[in-house]
Amino acid sequence: MMGESSRRLTALYCAISTFFVLIFTITFYLSSQNDQQIIDQLLQEKIYGVPLLIYVLAISLFAALILFAIITIAQKVQIRQVEEKIHLVASGTYDNPYLNKPLENNDPAFRVMDQDLQKIAGQMKQISQELQLLNARPQMVDGVTKEEILEQERHRLARELHDSVSQQLFAAMMMLSALSEQSQKQDLPEIFKKQLQMVTQTINASQSEMRALLLHLRPINLEGKSLKQGIEQLLKELQTKIQIQLKWEAEDVKLAPGVEDHLFRVVQELLSNTLRHAKAKSLEVYLHQIGNNVLLRFVDDGVGFDVANNDNKAGSYGLNNMRERVTSLGGTFKIISFKGQGTSVEVKIPVTTEEE
Image 1 (cartoon, rainbow, N blue to C red):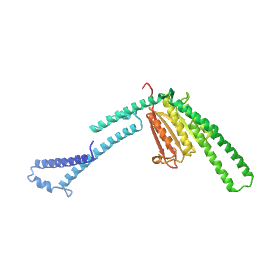
Image 2: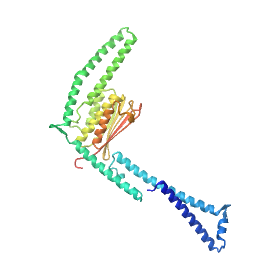
Image 3: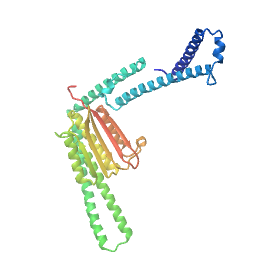
Image 4: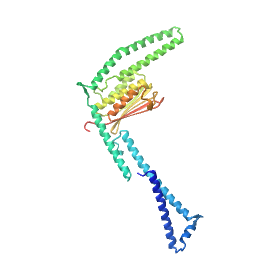
């Protein structure tokens, strides 16, 4: 691969070579005419009033410029091909046929770079498979799987929240509704009505937060259902409890059971994060298999946030947990969000079976 200085030096050599070749050709032509004053004629010869040497010099520089442009364009094309392959590896698309397509290039440096990229893609695919198989196996703690311990604890917390806090919030909401009806019938000060309305809105927000927490604490496995069935059941149940416009498209994808459980847990955490922090009015969920990858996308129209400066803000802990969970499956986790314009989350998991 030639650098900027190498290309300029090559162009300079081309200009010098072209100049001498043209001078030699003209000199040979003049000598064949038996001209005894070749040098004088060469210096004095003009075409349209311009000395012949100027034409020779211009042609040499033009040839050098063309050579420089050809080399630069060819290298940019080759670099673009390498960049595309690097992007495929970075995005986790290890099975794309373009990765195995040889570069249209005879430069040894590019050939070595291309071979290294193919090796990296193969190693990353192997690592993804091993990570999925490792995470699909149950992790035992004192004879009980770690997931069972977490599930029991989540059940306990969900029961306590539902039986205590959730019931108290419901009772408070009923009392506030009764007070609101009485305030409409009586001639009360306007400030009292506004304060009552603010308290009602606060209780409503607390109930929505509680529903999101209970959703977050639901069992983490699919309980015999497919990933598509689990997601659809979750969204249909959510639609009856939360005032939010939902749209979803889900394919019946096939993953290892342990991987499906992890991905289902990611869906739960994404829903919980959206309900608790996004303040969204609509949410779109997509689950598709594209090639040898399963793609999960969440798109909401909520408040959004600054992805670069969200490390210490609400919701960042859950996002970090999801990112770690997806990474442990050999997948990629991508967030695009802008303040006031909503958030898009993309999860890509490579399809791996135990036979592989």
